[in-house]
Image (cartoon, rainbow, N blue to C red; front, side, top):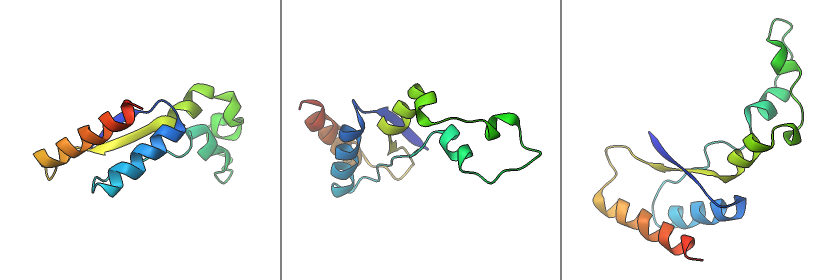
Length: 98
């Protein structure tokens, strides 16, 4: 159970993940690649759908590539305490005001 957020760009996402982790928050990157990129490197299966054998480069899916580069997630599990929420908001506000 994660809360997805989109950073302005990949650099901001990396900055947020580092800051949140230093503050004790388990922020994640979730996806490092698009589905097309993952499938392109998957072993070839003659019975697999044609899509998995015909996926192009990341440039062929610019929207998916951008989302994969900008997406980060915050924890929402039952062990998240009010103080954790305050820390998350503080980090997000600090980076957002830059």
